[in-house]
Structure formats: structure tokens, C-alpha cells
Length: 490
Image (cartoon, rainbow, N blue to C red; front, side):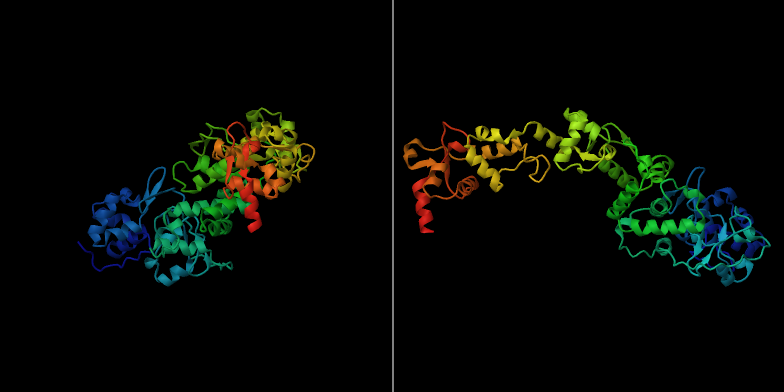
């Protein structure tokens, strides 16, 4: 069946608006009359039931896909738009707002079309005419004929601010003209992009306790524009914004939680958006929390249980390594992990990477004082002092660090690494032992400086051997005659 005369369908118009105009043309009455004549349940059609839309398409001879693209499926607690779950407040098919200039261009009152884009929560202006949208006298009607009734068109108010980029993106997304350059946003729903943008921008613009539902339309547009400029850049830009949000939090308590640090953004992702998937912003925030907070294993963060601790506070690190907090604080300052002028409160708010900090503290607990290193390496005091002086043996606490001169300690793992290299040398054959001597002897005979010769042996540049009955540096022997001859020939 095809109605005649035909009424052209424009993809910018909602299905309910088109159905009302078509009904007025053919019956002189509103949408309900025509829909009932087609045998369609009026409530089902108004709510965007798929079957109801299909019957309407068949009855009018219009492409079903075009009508579905212009329809919003409304349920009790949520809605669907083009196959995506959306919240009911995000997109409404109700003709609550309009652009006076657009309607003037439509012509007669019977030709007034309610544009789909006007139903989006984040749209407060007509991007084609740079005018604020006007509220209809009746906000719960499905078409402009009933929403405006006998009222005259509202006064057009010019918007002087530049059209936000997100409105251009939204119009392109609705009408299928997205160029595909931004794969990051193409894989998300419209609501996921705009809702996350609005929340990021609102907190950056109005603070952690912002109530986005109380923002005026112009404020919502500004906040969404700010957030969209960040969100469109992808995860790295979002993480930088989260850094700013966290750093600007007024929370001062040592144990301040994510609600205090991230404000309404965390509250939205943790409690208020459970019915609709918020998209990747939730995973990004969770990773940011875990990355910068000392989250205990077993804690659920934004719906996911954290199984492994990644960061410690000063307090939890103290318990983990068994060092009293004041002493640990002094130690971390010496190690350069805490600024020397940091207060107790500032130190308490800092977090330390678990793998690095625990390893560092354990290294300090097992470190060897410099005066005991000769015995540990089986080297002379002079040899150890040389290695320390030329930087082949590194102190655990940097030399420039406070206290490093009086209490020089070397990490046991650092010394063990050197000893392991010695044990990897081939064992000296007893039949050739007469040709080989300790490194110290070779240096005395002119084979070179001790530190250079030791480094060359351990790096494999000079062939060295290890006596099976000795350990450490004292076990290394080299062919003195060959080294002296080589040095003379060079």
C-alpha cells in the first residue's frame, strides 16, 4: 500500500513528527488516527516498537531502515537508538525544543518538522542558524503541532559563541557522514562519547562537586565542548585530564578515597550509570585510580576486583617491610623517593610503586657497608676504594644524597652480580698456572690500571680465568706476559 499524495520523508525529522504530518495531510487529524487506520497499536508506535515501525513502513512504502534510523525505542527504564542502549534523558523523541528559524523555513504550520538532533540532551542550539533552541509551551508532545498549539513561534536568540566541535561531530554521526579518521570514537555509542565529555568538562569547569543536572543549557554546552576537545584526543589526553582533576582536589586526608579525588566523575561511574554502559572512560578511570592510589588487594574499584597491589602508601609500605614509619620516611628521603622538605602530611599522601619500593627497602635492609665490601668481594681495601671512586661500584644511596658520605652501603644484589660474573669465568688449568697471576700483580707489572683491566676481563675483552680454590676478585688471574706484550705493541 502506498499513500497518495506522498509526503517526502527527511532523515533529519523524527518518525513521530513525520507520522503526525502525514496523518494531518490524509485524515485532517493527528498521528493516532492514521496509525490506528494502519492497524498499529498507538502506544507501541509512540514507544518505537520494532514491529509497529515495520508495519508503518509497509503501509507507507517507505524504507524500513530510514524509519528505524529516525525512531527512538523507549522502555520503562532506558531506551534504544539505532541498536545502542541509551538513557531516557539522553535522547527524547518529544518535541520539547525547536529552532524558530528552522520552522519558518519549513513554511506552513502543518509542515513544521521536529528535528531528531533537537531531542539530544547535549544540544542547546541550532548549529545551522547559531540560535538558542526555544522551549515549547508543552514539552511532552510527540510533534510540534501539539507542542506549540496556537502559540506563536518563540523569539530567536543569537548564540555568539563559536559552534562547539561536538555538535558538528554529532550531526555527522547521526547522518552517517563520519569520515572514519577517529577510530577511537567510532567504536563508541553517541552517549558514551558525549556523556563522558560532559562529565570531564563539568568537573574541570565547575569543580569536583558539580551537579550536572543543575547546569543551564549554555553551561552544559560549554562543559561538553571542553570535555569533548579532550575526549576526542583519546586515552592519553583523558589520563592527563584525570591528573589535573586529581591534583586539584581539595581533599587533604591521607586516606582520601576516589570519590574525594575525582568527585562527580567517580560517583557517576560507580553508582549512577550502572544501567547504561559508560564505555571506556570507566576502565581509564579505574586504571588511573589503581596507578595513583594504594588500593588494597581484594578491593572492588568501579565493578572490578583488584587482585594485586601496585602502589603503597607510607603506612602500608611500613607494614610490608617491617620498618617503623618515621625511620622509613627518613630512609625514603635519603633514597630520593620523598622530597627532603616534605611534611609528614605530604609524605603520608604520597604513593610508592610496590615492585620498586619494596625491592628498594629490602635492598637497603640487606646492603653491605662499604668497609665490609672487601671481605665480601675477596678484594683488597684499595681495590674496593678504586671501584667505588671510578663508579664501577654504586652506592645504594646516591652520593649527592644527604647522609651518603657517612653511611655508604652497597646493595648486596649489586655485589652478587659482580661475583656471578667472576664465577662464569673458566677455571684455570693447573698445568698453565705458572703463566697466570692475579690482576693486582699484572697491574704492578704494567698491564694497565686495575679498574680498566677488571672491567675488560668481566666484559670478555681480555681473557681471564678463575682459580678453583679461591672466590671473588682475588680468584681472577690473567696472562701477565701476553698483556704486557700487547700493551707494548699497541
